[in-house]
Image (cartoon, rainbow, N blue to C red; front, side, top):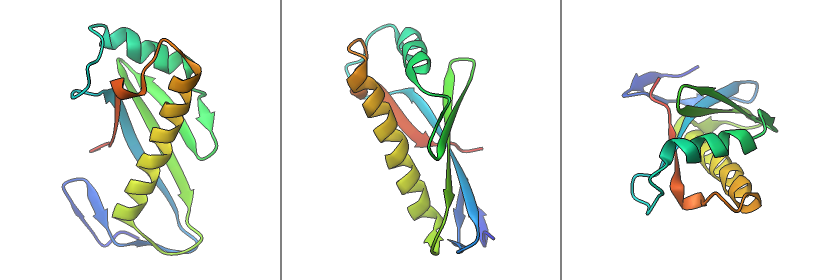
Length: 116
């Protein structure tokens, strides 16, 4: 069980029998030379994502895509390490989708932990 919360980040360990869900936002990357049609790029990405892929599921509310990454931790994992691992997993899924869709560029998208 988490020890304390600070600005949306849990501190503590995820134990051997715990499961952890981490939610990420997939948004247009503000630092990339992205197209003027951010909304269309997000819609194209959404249509190419599988709703559930392994430990990750996706949903869309309005223009925002969220990814929920679930880990059944086989060993204790610090929450901030868990957040990093999940972000890398979601980034790899987005990268793979962009590789398969020539109209999408990986650099157009950012993945960040949700602050909910």
